Image (tube, rainbow, N blue to C red):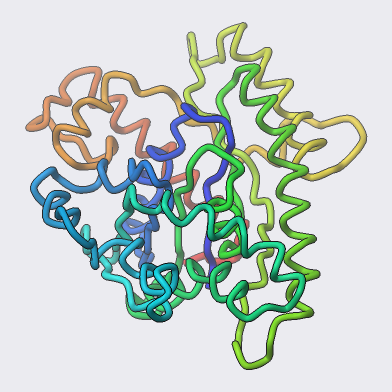
Length: 325
């Protein structure tokens, strides 16, 4: 299972929008895609579904058709994980719906993590709960790719999400905060990966297959960069240059001078300010907007550029993770 987490502990870089648009573009390129909303804020689900559907998925009592509903028996002490509902968005694109209730299981995930090193069965069941639900749903959906949206923090929910991930894409904005975020993210990923590798050696054989928790870095996507006459503005270019070395040193743990063009930069995505409100209103990705949605004149030019950007991004991600169609 090729599962890609989009992860940065710095919020506000456009991570959820990136996952949403990447999922749609992969589907348009012929991939069967499972998008997974593991951010307790559930922004991916809010972006993908209208209010009436969300109200049906989030009733006042239990939420059996959300991700939390799939893991609730295990964390409630009444059983193990159960099959998750896959919400169909279009064609080959499905969604595991997020849930604000996921925040309730953070403490249990945190408590059980160190117990994996002791070989405790429940610790492994809890830590791999997301992976087992995602794997089952991906098989049900026939997914070529799983794209996982996580929150902007280094907490226990994200750690379990990363254990379930074979690859990691890092969205960054050209600013000081993203640079500082990389300095936290890189060492944390390496620590999680190393701890999980130690734990795997102690996993009870009765549990069967376990996630490998590779968390292999794919590269970074420079989000919301500004251009003037086709070139990055001076302020943005400054941080873009520093991110080049920051990713190499912090995430890849590689010394030495960075090179340009940066092989770790997957793609740059412009800040399509005027298109996002239209896309939210139309409940579709920005690159699918038409004149009927209000994308006329210069907007249509931006739509075409947005499509080219995301198609290039998805084709390069597919190449890097070994899933080319």
